[in-house]
Amino acid sequence: MKHRKIIGRLWLLLIVVIVSSLCIGRYAVPLTELGRILFGLPSGGDATMTTVIRNVRLPRILLAGLIGAALSAAGVCFQSVFQNPMASPDILGASSGAGLGAALGLLCGLSARGVMLSAFVCGIVTIVGVFLIGARAQGKQVVNLILAGIMVGSLCNAGISYIKLVADPTNQLPAITYWLMGSLSGVKWSDLQFFAPFIAVGAVPLLLLRWRINILSLGDDEARTMGVSTDRLRWLVICCATLLTAACVAVCGMIGWVGLVVPNLCRRLVGNDVRVLLPSGLLLGASFLLIVDNVSRSLLATEIPIGILTAFIGAPFFLWMLMRKEKL
Amino acid sequence: MIQVESLSVGYGARQVLHDISFSAAQGELLAVLGPNGVGKTTLFRCMLGLKAPTGGRVLLGGDDVRQLSARELADRAAYIPQSHYPAFHYTVYDMVLMGTAHGLSPFVSPGRAQQKQAEQALARLDITALADRYYTQLSGGQQQLVLIARALAQQARILFMDEPASGLDFGNRIKLMRQVRRLTGEGYTVVLSSHDPQTALTYADRVLALHSGGVLACGTAREVITEATMGALYGVPFELLDGRVIVPKGAE
Image 1 (cartoon, rainbow over the protein chains, first blue to last red):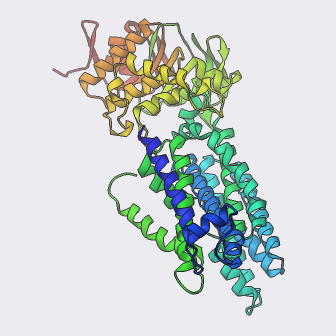
Image 2 (cartoon, helix red, strand yellow):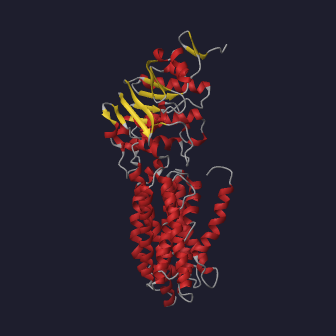
Image 3 (cartoon, rainbow over the protein chains, first blue to last red):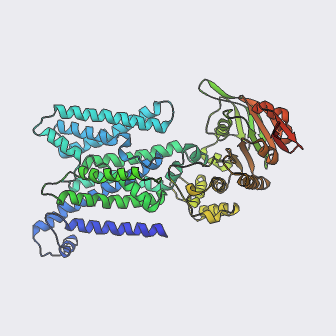
């Protein structure tokens, strides 16, 4: 089958990207050494090499892959649920809420883990708020939800601006600014251990529900007459996708565009059937963010925040998509 | 099979339908006629359990639609919307396969049995050749057949068709209506809304004429499609030729 072949190739791509990511960097590691280090064989290299691979690159690479996969999956699901290929994971304001949480945490001088937690909790709280407002509004639920998301998101952004204004300009302000640009530098195994379960809890139901998400994308009336409980299904999908988004933003800051660009690329590759689209989005999203992260940590002497790079790649792609004549 | 009992529906304070009663037996083709905006679509939404009535009730196979779950409803009645342009395109096969959803638990993707249901539905309408084409690339008539195939894959015995013939050329309209008649011959009950009294006269067993929110006439096609009733319904004079052809008056 055609789709199996594409998924197989995406797996291959991911493996190649992971292996090369482990080797690439300011501290270049030869492939043979890498194998020895990973499999615990006695290596000819120095101890630093082992530390770099085991404690720096491996957690960072796994986390980058996980975040790329999670953001793409969230993007695929939001697009199908809102019947709009231009939807992205931050459409309901989860990232702005998380950003506000992080800014607050940095202002209060919390530890790195404290900032992550604050971002995660605020992201979730924001979405709960958006749900409550959207559910109370009159008229079309999906439209209300998106409008509520945009409004609450801009409220959070105003909060972030105010915090920047009152933050100490010598250390807090740069920290907040840098955090908002998104970065994977300095992630530890413990970060991975803490957030991976959230990502799993968000991703597994989406994978199981993926065929039904197709039906939801036909519109509520049609889906309901086909026996699908549209409201329940949509809430479940949005909750899971939000969990993914909030967890990602909490760990690595605002990384935009992945959740928009990768799903749309995948739609071209494998079509719109979420049964195939979701797995391919997970795989391609992981590869995409890994490649961008590799550029971010090895292009210049100082690291470029990954959020800037994804925008450099994502924005032109989005514009190209807009200018295409045929329907996506 | 279908019983509508003094149904009233409205949006907010505005009453759209008032005290509507009619019924359709198994194997019947019921055509709903009425001018634009009279509430045909609203009536369909009520019968499919998508909109709550303000009064009265709709019974499908003896049960009130408001008491049935989405899955139980999908088991009895299928909806065939006007051919449309969904946000994302799917292949014809995938579209038809979606009709099998109500028989599956939410966390399960369709398996061999569902695939077979979809293949049979495509074969019954002779559109197996279209299976791998994209739904959005088909003509209006083909899209309508795909949506009917999806309803067949759903295996419900009542079919609601929202203006199936609109936008189809003369030949395709006849082909479509022949397929619909074949289905009623197999025991399906079909309710369709139409803009064309001629289609109703030629193919329908019973006709419901809606006018300003109420029932103007309801009965066999011969009883309802008369010069007087159609004139009152559409506000223009008609002439019935031979008892089989309805044309605007003075059209020669």
